[in-house]
Amino acid sequence: MKKEMICIVCPMGCHLSINTETLKVTGNNCPRGEEYAREELTAPKRVITSTVKIKGGIHKRVPVKTDGAIPKDFNFKCMRELDKIELTSPVKVGDIVIEDLLGTGINVVVCRDM
Ligand code: SF4
Image (cartoon, rainbow, N blue to C red; front, side, top):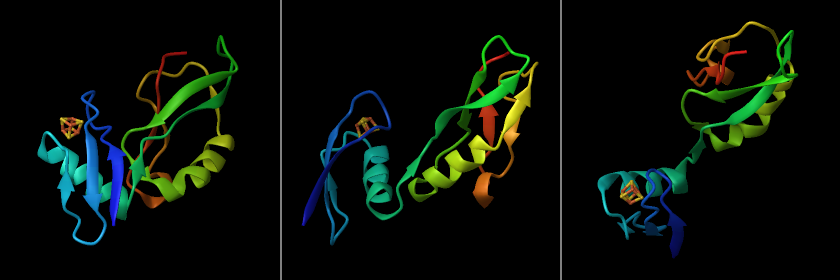
């Protein structure tokens, strides 16, 4: 069986096709697409972007993101962890909000000064 997907590794957006039995990938213009398609089929990951509460800032929430991709299955758990956070201004871009999120080795960091 074949599965179609769009490579999101770079703006080229190649249309990939992967054979789910042999894991042979076609349509990629570079090796990163092949790696992306195999990972997407076997263990998909995503960078999470969201916001958390902040006290004393010019807004009530500040944007945050993971500093790397985490397993897609962890998305809801990640959002629950972020919901528990309340920062206090001032914060700077790159400040760590959660270290080693859910044991993934990935941190959640602040995306803007506030
Ligand atoms: S296969 Fe390579 S060139 Fe095509 S979108 Fe993916 S990273 Fe970009």
